[in-house]
Every structure is written in structure tokens, then in C-alpha cells.
Image (cartoon, rainbow over all chains, first blue to last red; front, side):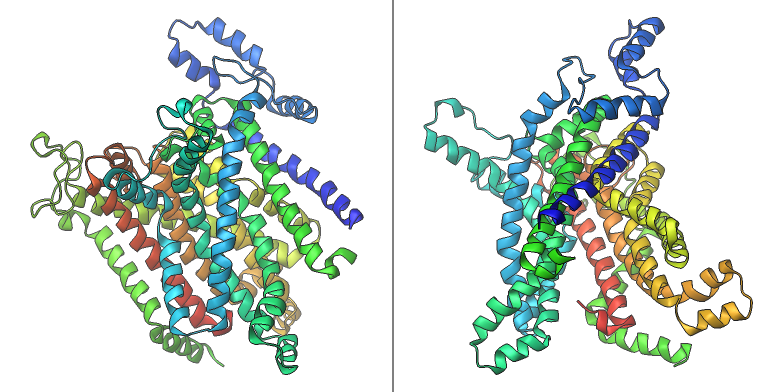
Length: 324
Length: 282
């Protein structure tokens, strides 16, 4: 198991370098420079000042040299300083924003897991029944609803019409004066909509994968054997079949992380949540290269770690993989 | 089995799948709307009318009006053109890249295959929406850039699919006989193997259109997609969000249009898949 883990960790390094290489070149080769934005904001900026600034940022060097310099700094976990006027270190900026994004995404993943798996299993146990048909239709509808639109609809329903939930930010006015329990309740209220919506995007897919994976497993000989030896049906399904059917779903869960992270740009924008997605949006608008690269790198690391965790889960569940 | 019986078998299965037929009909209607736009739309979609600002749905404006008094029904109808164009061009680009890379790496294998598949893994690990966002915001946001960027960030699935098909097809007898007859690699890849690998590509392309429509509307919603005054479903929704407390109709109707479009392409795609090979049904 340890050698397996070590091997997987080593394999992550070239992938990560590849991701940063592609991102770096795409972002730096796109037209428009950070100094353009700064010059727009400050019409008094002379061409000389601009050149000085470019030199200061290291933007005057050839792009491959810039990349190597960036990579060297990253190896020391130094993400550089933001180009924006506050000049703060990129890592500090990301660190403030990361927890809330990770919290929402993790809660969403948990929600996906506890809802999608029972739906998938129960419709696979009775394939082509009325229940299965209804869930199939619901899943198709879920696939097709743009989640940012659903966000608007829920905001209208729960926020504007019913006044049950807040529709913006993380804290209400007067948050500071609330008791500890009140603060937690306030947070929860603000998080319900974004979390539900993040999860909604994955629900349809996962219940579908779970169903097909389960259908595949139920057909296997060892399930027939389990039934033949007289085990209760619930034991056959939940103990013998479910475990095996979960394996491919775990892998998919790891692969869904980039999508979840990408989705946070939209939700954080809609609900004005000060997370990583919002920071990214602002950084892109200002062409703040170090912040953009920092977030893309962190996003890639999260994705790779997610994949790794999925693979570890897979290896723990399936001894055949460990020995390979 | 010859080609014509395969085709009739496909049609027989497809016609039995009621949802797929409904999807097909809706897709056809969407095409008709996009082509006949100027005839169907009751108003000029860009006509500003200060007398009718933020009116709720009525007989003269069935979907209501927006903050500039523009007719939302007309804007939604014009928006269908944008969605259709983005969907088809983006998927076209993704399919061409995916098919070529997948075919070459499946057929030749070796270092080319290793490098390409590594590249695919890397592309799949980048939060693609972040990358799309970054690139489009830096280029001038506009419909052509959106199509191209969505296209070049969504070819990986097709490449994997085509590669897998090639890996099994290239071992078959008909490829061997083509080679024995002296056919060039180019001819074997594109004339002999590729046609046999096209059905999963078709399915993933139809499903891909749905995905591209969603991404375009999300980008336009964030304000970095299709730019106003050109109407797109996403940027009408932005106005809806800005007026969410007072005008629900601006948020509701464009979303329904996106929903129906995506649903129709998904149903059609799944229907085609089931009809090509019922065993693939999930």
C-alpha cells in the first residue's frame, strides 16, 4: 500500500508541472497585459512608467524564462505578490478565500453522496418499474436545468417571496451581536442555498452512474450465489452488491472535483460569497497573473489530491489494485 | 448484416423510444425558430421603449419586458440563434480535434499515444471552467472566441472514445485485408476504421451540444460571454438577477428556453445511443 501511494504521489508531479505549463502559456500569450488595465485606471501613466512596471513584474523577459522563474518560486511554495494595488502575497489572498470554497464543495459532495446513492440503488433494484421510470425522468430534468438559473428561481422563491433565506453574502447585518449559536444558525442559513445548488449539479449524474453500476453488479454470478445460499435480499443488495457497485462511482467522484471548483465561480458570483471563485473572477478581470496562476495551481492540486483520495479509497476496497 | 438493415433496425428502435422522438422533434423546432427568427419575433429585440419598462407578462408582451422596455419574448427568440451557433461550432471544433488525436493515437500507439493521453489527463485535471473564464476574459469577449475556447477545452472525451474504438477496430480482419491490398495508413484510418467508430462520436457530439449551450449561457450570465445589446439567454438572465426583487419574469423565461434546449439534445443523444446499440443503455 505504501509503495502504491508513493508511486501515485510521484506520478502527480509531472501532471502538475504539465498543468501549470499549459495554464501559464495560455494566460500569458492571451492578448492584453496587466499594465493595460493599470494604464486604463491611471491615465497619467507614461510609457516609461509602464515599461518600468513591466520590468518590475518581470513581464519584459521571454515567456519561457518567466515560466521557469515562476516554477522555481513555486517549488519553494512562493506564489509571488498580487499585481493589484494592495500588492499582497498571493498565498495570503488565497488562504483567506480557500476555506469557504472547500467547505461548500465538501458539504455538496457529502450531500451528493447521501442522496444520489440511495436513489441509484433503489431504482436499480427495481429496473423499469414505475419508481425507476419516475427517477429517470427526474434525473433527465436535473441534467438539463442550468444550476445558475435554478439559483435565481430559488432566490426568488425563498428569498424574495417567502423571506425564509438570505440571498447574498455569508453574514447578516448585526452578525457581530449574535450569540455563538445564533452565529452558527446565521451561517447555516446563508450556506443552505449555495450548498444545495452545488450539490444539485452532481446529483443527476451520480444517481445515474450508481444505477448503471448497480445494474451491472446485480447481474454477476456472486450475487446469484449469495441469493442461492439463502441470504436476505436486503443483505445481498446492501452488503454484497453495493460495495462492488460503489467502486466506479468513487473514481467518478474524484473526477468531478474540477467541475465543482469551476462551478464555485458562478455560485460565489450569484450569492456574493467571498470565496476562491470570486477572487478568481476579480483576478481575471484585472489580469492579475500571479493570482490567476496561483488559483489554477491550487485548483489542480485539489483535483489531483481528490483523484488520489478516490484511488486510495478504491485500493482499500479492492485488494487486487494494491498488489498491482 | 448489410448497411440498410442496420439502418432500418436503428430507426425501428429509435421510433419506439418515445422520449428520444420528443427530443428530436424539439431539436427540429429549435432549428425552425432559429431560422425563422425575424418572422416569429413580435418585436425588434433591441428596440428600447421607455414607456414599457419592467412590465409583467401581458397579452402584448407574453414574457414581459426588461429594464429598458425591450420585449423579452423577442429577445429569447433571437437568443436561440446564439445558442444554436455556439453549440454547433464549439462541438464541431471539439469533435474534429478529438477525432484526429484519438484516431492517430489509437492507430499508431507508441510515444504519440503516450504523449497524447498524458495531455488528455492534464487537460481533464484543470478546472476547465476557470481556464475558459480566464481566456475569454482576456480575449475580447465575443461569440467567436466563445465557440473556439469551448471547442478547444472540450475535445478530451471524444479523443478517449475514438482511441478506444481504434484500439479494438485496428485488430479486425477488414483492416488487415485493406493493408494487404496496399492501402495507405491515411486511407485505412479515415476510410476504413473511422466510419466504424463514428456512432459513439455522434452520440457524444449531440450530448456535447447540450453542454456547450450550458457553458455559453453561464459565461454570458457572468458578463464575459455574448455582450449586450446582442440578446443571449445568459445575458438576459443577468438582467433578471439585477432585478430579482422586482421582476421575476426576466429570470424565468430565458431559463426555461435553456432548460428545454439542453433537455432536448440530451434526450436525442441518449435515444441515438440506445438505438445504435441497446447494450450500451445506462
